[in-house]
Image (cartoon, rainbow, N blue to C red; front, side):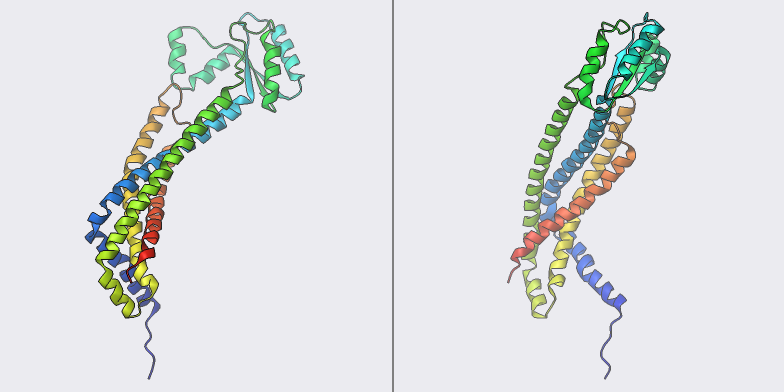
Length: 306
């Protein structure tokens, strides 16, 4: 007598129907158990996505600040002679740690400013070119900037009212503020995630209790552990997916609106952020929700009814 043989395709189809399709139907049937979990997890995922977006912006801001921190602008007087400017340029180039010194004329400064939102209109309303010529010095490290500032600010070619762009504590202040802000937001997200996991675990356990007779029967007929636990893991994943999709529907439009507002502001609100970044965060949030839901389900499954 030939042994029964079931094609692999049929086995996979049956397993998918048992674990995924039945879990989806049971999830919809027991949806009231998961409503609190959907709310708490949705808030946690929304905060997590917002924090991830803020962290991206903070990284771009710090990168820009780090780049700008190694550059000092020395502003030249309008009546400074070419000889005075050349002499200052030579002295600056001779200093250790200076990588380059580039002269930027008033017209070039105006052209650069015109590419930034708001500054073009500001220049037009002034009637004249308000931007001074400058020497842009790029240094190899931040430690030499103080000596360059000291050398330049008392030179006769330099504007005495506003000699340089050097600010010793600017970068450290920005880094500290952003670091504390992101750290606080991450702590809040972690607390919300713990609450969401606890609430989702409660919903999973309630669903398990309503099907305890079904679980006992499955054990009696020799069902494998994955056949029993798999549907509950899927239900947790569906809870996280639904909460993540709801959070993404709020987060993505809000991020795109922020990108649009940043493009029309004098100071960019979200440097480096683009609609593509918003969409990337948008799909990461539901994915994180599914993982969070499965984690909550696995905790709830530790106390299956005997």
